[in-house]
Length: 357
Ligand code: SF4
View 1 (tube, rainbow, N blue to C red):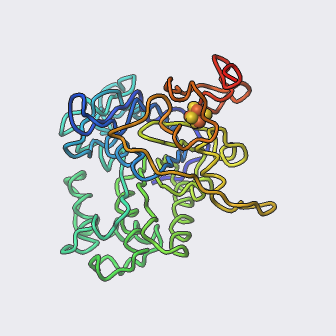
View 2: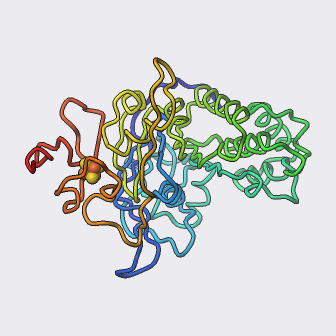
């Protein structure tokens, strides 16, 4: 791994019109519905939303780890590999092929190489993700051997020691089993394993949710440091928007399987536009400035099997008007906000609440 600048760069992963269904036919549930997102080089993109909003399903679809009955029914996941790499991420001897590769079209061997080499995922529960009958060293070595067939035992040991030290775990713990480690250490080991092959993208699916607040902060600080040091891009998924606003460059909010707002993290915090985003931001204490009264969001997350017509948030939205229960709001760029997208009929010049009052 070599240190690189942390400036956000060109598109690395483009998710275009991604749709994931559970079930088939008219009764199919759209867990992810026509989602567009772009992750840039060296960027941390945060994905926030309540349970069932589709964020984890999206992460599993992007990495092709989705299990039945989940099915990807539409869209593309375009990966812009580095010059000189083939579709699976191997450095090729031949001339570099131009253009991105669609992850959804990859063959099984291509996928096996793509995962870990180019994209690695850290799940919420390290206890479940780690193999209980193998030591940390054995599990890191497994990953290394699968992708570097000629690697020796001594080289595996050396690499494991380096990775563990990098994430703040003493190298001596490589002989430990998962149950011999604390929750924070297990999650750090998962991060070390994810970094084993120096991937371009780290997908973090609720990586600190199972940890207590103090350890959560320590692991987050470690992640921020690692990203700055190694320059990988991060897709960070959590239900905790306050946490995302601290670590992400940009934030996308999901509701009922759709992205309903995306903007730079600072803008989301300072001036949330979508009523649901406003509700989320108002539900945690401000990081700086005067205290404000905390407010929750009334109602419950929607039942994806029976979404209301128009805007899925309308039953909970105190700004709802006639059009909201009729037309599905599509993402649009509000005037004077070039980096923001919002899916709400409020202040829409093509037919706003004012027209109906
Ligand atoms: Fe509320 Fe209507 Fe906007 Fe939906 S489209 S968030 S119901 S104002």
